[in-house]
Image (tube, rainbow, N blue to C red; front, side, top):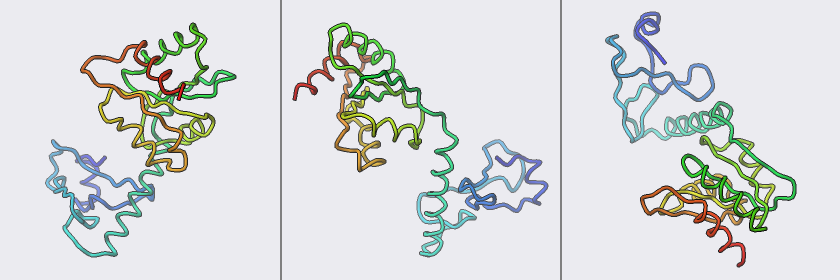
Length: 194
């Protein structure tokens, strides 16, 4: 982050998309910064490291390489998932956010009903870390539980790990209310008998 004092040290010379320290993550300013050189214009089309429009293919490739490096760096910085891997579990469950309590209770219901033994990973950030990949590789099936109509997290995980995509099973539901443990349990059991 560049604040007024940082910009003073550079005489206001900085480039919004320039990777100055090699981690793929360029410096930026925030609205409210009072330095005259703090403003920048962001665009969704091709741009150079100074945020100027360009259709230059070499500049485009450089930006794409920087973005790859940025995601690789982010994998090392985001919070790791919270994982419970009990011995004997052969299916995994991935959930995040407000669905986690329903999943934890559903796992208790499955255990009480002598259902399948499950491992659970509460995803806390993207991009996927090594722990996420290791969890997915370990189990025969992975249920991605989400309060979402389209199962977007399952889609994201399938794109991030195409070699593991056949393992993912969607347990997505969206009726405007929080997921219940009973719904999660039944969604898993309905797919396990197939």
